[in-house]
Image (cartoon, rainbow, N blue to C red; front, side):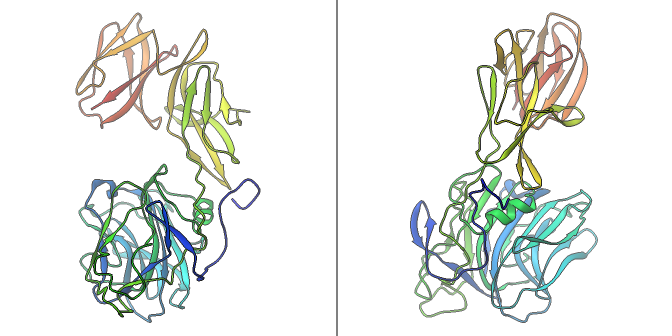
Length: 406
């Protein structure tokens, strides 16, 4: 978003000294230089990185004339971004081919690179250079999720990156182009929705003894710190050490508009300011636009499951679906007197009490229908195979109740 109402910082590379954020305090801006021989950073082997949709961002700087592959941020056999003959690319492991861009990035300047990926979706792989879409492609599936997420290498191929890396971010959602462009030049500190980990690299002292700085701090607060591996970090070392030649354009903290909906009395309210809203109904067929409901707040006139979309440029970011029941006084958050469930939370068999025989559906937290049938008094629903999370039962006459699958 490049117009009025946007608080994001935009612009090109910048190399002057400035103050950055590290652990909530103002620190010197730094980056990390990789020697291209064996330097890399190992991120936690946590299931949070076992995804088929997400976004990887990083700033890179290199003047090396290397052929072949150099890993930037890679989870082998699943997803990742490389330099391939000095051009940004992504590898399609199931068929052994690559999705590549055409711009040489070994010009000695800082470049922001990103990949938004939805594996299994046609043209679901989008590669960005300096905020501009540079290539698209399709990856049908992953070959596996057993690989470790690594910065600066591809786990088993010795595809080491030579140059500097800064500002790595990992999201569990495929960001759209405007989000990538508007966020790339500011800093993220602390937790924001959909952000799994952010590494600002604001640690160490330039070319001094940094032997104690071997943990790359996750500034999101989620605790996914990385481990520096094989770096020299000795005083005077200029090829495998922390460096103040950083990529961050501004010390300003990114303004992020979370898509969170709260319920108060008879009104649903979306968080955020300076953006365009669109209220949606979550149905078994997907999200349906509610005409003329474009304010930050929305008062529904009937029971249902609702979401809000925030327009960011030409794309929309949607909240999770919120189930509500409309009674005589308006919205009654997640409560319905027409049906009740027990136990809640539930492991396997959910008992549903109803005063009538009526068609019903079960929705997950993002509004996808997972079951439908006929509800009878004192019915039992087998949820033993459901994924743990929040679900909603909605009857044809509009009654809604929430339950939690453990």
